[in-house]
Each structure stands twice: as C-alpha cells, then as structure tokens.
Length: 125
Image (cartoon, rainbow, N blue to C red):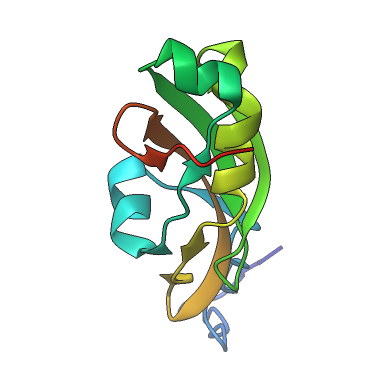
C-alpha cells in the first residue's frame, strides 16, 4: 500500500522484473510438426489374418514424446481392431528428435497416422 502526503510521491523501483513462468510440463504439437521430428519409423508386422484380408486403413494413434524423443503411452484413437496391436507395437519403436521450447527439451503430445496399406511389410508370424 502506498500513501503519499506530500508531492512528489516516490514509488520504489521493482527489481528483477516479472518472474519467468516455468515451461509447461507437456506441450501439444501438430502431427505435421511431429512428422518433421521423426528420425526412425518402424514398420509393423501384420498378423496372418491381416495379411490374407489385406486390410488397408488409416490408424490414428495418440502419443506422448519424452525429452529424449522416445514414444510414451501410445493409444489407438481410431482404426480397425485387427491391426491395432501391430500398429501400436510399431509406433512404440518410433524415435523422434527432442522438441525444443526456448532451447529446452520438453515432453509433447500429438497424434500419428499409420497407413496400413503403405507403412508396413507383412512378415511371417
């Protein structure tokens, strides 16, 4: 509280400026930004049934990427049940460059689209 009874009233100067807010613990990035950070993309191994039915679909997977570029907690958002496990197994092996915010690596969240007709090889089980 500042009380002035005589002119001029002097306000003490603030030192140090406003405190810097800590960086957010998790940052949401677009799939396009995440794609540019991708340095290793694993192919998925389709099941025998998937191989014979030749399922072609886009599987959307929500992922976290840690400060080292490793995939965290992949979860299928949409896609056929028959290929979900194979897609999740592959996405867990993806590797990203760390996402930098103000020069510091931060954890991010995004989605990945996997095209089962294009992004895989069907190996024998």
